[in-house]
Length: 157
Length: 291
Ligand SMILES: Cc1cc2nc3c(=O)[nH]c(=O)nc-3n(C[C@H](O)[C@H](O)[C@H](O)COP(=O)(O)OP(=O)(O)OC[C@H]3O[C@@H](n4cnc5c(N)ncnc54)[C@H](O)[C@@H]3O)c2cc1C
Ligand code: FES
Ligand code: FES
Image 1 (spheres, each protein chain N blue to C red):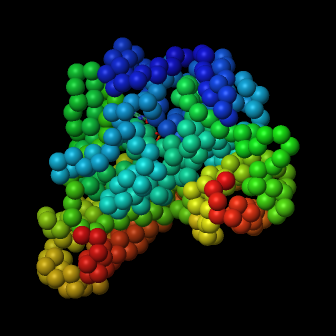
Image 2: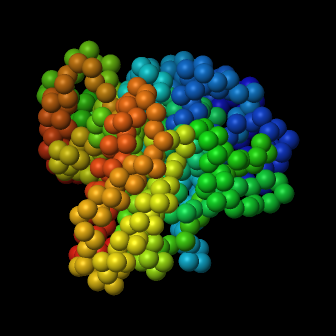
């Protein structure tokens, strides 16, 4: 079936299998491979994107449900070579090892900081409870969130 | 596979009447997992996420109506006065899951572990179901008929749940292996109804479907009456009465052994949850909170 979605500001149309997820639409049909596919069951958060401004797992959204709607992915955080302050904080804090979980974390952190510019630790842990990292042990990810929060100086990203 | 994307409830019900094999999809947090993992391949899907009629939520003449399409995130923001429901909603999955997952989907899946279900049972909620021929309300126990089984007719959709607002404290709590992203090993919702001087308790994950514990409920209400607690929040039932209540709640469970826990552990957990929930409620009344 044909699905038309506004992705990172631009309308895109693609032909997908009717049972396809938004994640399959983004990765396989539109070539946006920043959102990762790891579990396809909502457990890992590596496919996190925004659908009409809401943080969701793209693997759990039927592509047809996104038809006519606004999707923002990790690719939409920056243009050109510059990194988003949250991405830069991940690099500086050493919060990336294999990097597979990183796009999902970055999206979830941007979402958190847009709603709470100065979150305390329980709040950060709660906000990231839907994102799994198999490498870092989370400590450096928490450091990255705090670093990003201070970089952004409380202004919304 | 066909996908239908109706814009109105009427349109959706017409489609459902013509194509009873079309499986509704709301937040997709249960259904998409089955599609992605190839466990289920429905002939057709019916997107209900655009139906404004299912997204209503709020007070309607002395009752609360919660549309089937309202997400847990919205429940937390919009129904904070329904304390146990907000607590159960907070206990679901992760932010991503709460942004999409709906109470209608929890009802549709009808898992014995669905976190919203003990709350609806303790509220004595009705489930409102519609077909092309009209809407009707079923008491929750007539809707949730077994593990993953509901009384939803093949041409029907869940519109939402409705319950009378009861004054009094209450809580939802669940036992799992960690704080986030867990399927409950046991869960419990307690509601005190000050007007009717009634205690209502429902258990999740410890039976084929959600269970109430009528014997324990009557016992606790009487113990509170004997102690004078209903009139004077400082007059408390005796500790051994609270213990007896906890044992009676555990006695109502019909647990099984599975990968998440043994039947014996689940019973033990029910008693612990019951003891704590009643103590919290009594403390809340004494502190004069949450009336
Ligand atoms: C990672 C993860 C964690 C989770 N954690 C929890 C948890 O902690 N607690 C918990 O209870 N659940 C949990 N779940 C399960 C799920 O999120 C809930 O059951 C949720 O309420 C389902 O809602 P949904 O809108 O996403 O349902 P969907 O997947 O869209 O639908 C579920 C079922 O309900 C039917 N349905 C939906 N809406 C209607 C309607 N209006 N009329 C008729 N039928 C309908 C569908 O046909 C389907 O059979 C989790 C799921 C995931 C993936
Ligand atoms: S791939 Fe979507 S949550 Fe894991
Ligand atoms: S860095 Fe490897 S999974 Fe997180």
